[in-house]
Image (cartoon, rainbow, N blue to C red; front, side, top):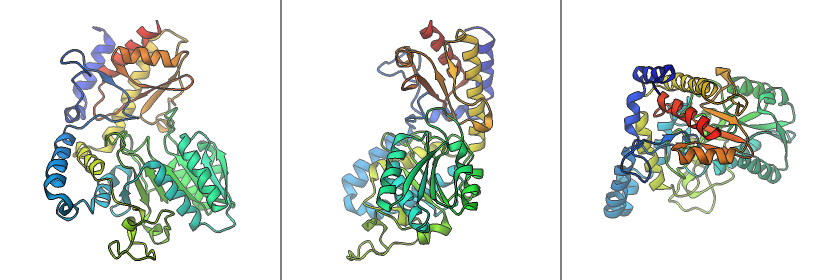
Length: 404
């Protein structure tokens, strides 16, 4: 690979302000091998890589905090306050001030909490829930269930048209900030403003944007937001999700899942429910401590990292990958369905091609890991904290080899 593309990739890596952050992750040993070429991992939009500090932290949690301190760790090791503490650690990455993010449960559960709470805040004559027509399926399933429970109806709308479609019947709109299939970035500020002008609320799904690009929940006046932590935030498989409730809405947030952990007096064990103040209202049951503290350790990989630098590298990486694909892959074999416009792009590139499942299997066999979405989409997630320009070039050339 002694050509112009390789020289450029090496120069870009040498000048990369985030290059040293890669050392914080367990990446350079190939899977099931002691030596050889490192895997090119382009599936961080499904599961982020392991930060080095997590293993030691979990060992301490298991052996000392659980093994020796046992129940004392709820106080002495800070287990009880972990949902809000970790939430405040995530808050700067999504443009939120402290006290508005709580960590716990899955994204699906948090979507349910957010949607039902939003409907309960809306006047009874607002009988419509708008849902991103291309949403991740679970969001649609949850929205349909929430609508049935609250006597509303669901209307699917393309996310790009959401601002024009909200109206006097809309109680809440559920929108993905970045489309999971195409990587298209949607207009959070404009859509939120349009919904508010129509008297409606918006719930944003941040699963494919948090940790990949700047998000401005407070600045854009977002009502509620949810997101997972195992993608660009590198929290690990099944890591707990988070729920954002704008401070002004917290007194009106009526969770459909009131649990003892969100009670104003959790150890009072009273038969009647009195919600706690603030973000604690988003809690339900006993926090998932092992995965919660693994996430907290994983977030240390973000120390000293600017999300603006992450965004600049993300766009440069995806631009470079698309250029390499155009140069290396024979014409007509793949088609990008990810927007070329930076203002409309997340941090992934999705390519449509025939026999996409077989092609991705061939890539993985050759050490380039992305993923496949039926029927014909190859997805490559570019995680700026650890993906290199030489990785983008190798991925494009390997794709060309597989397609040939």
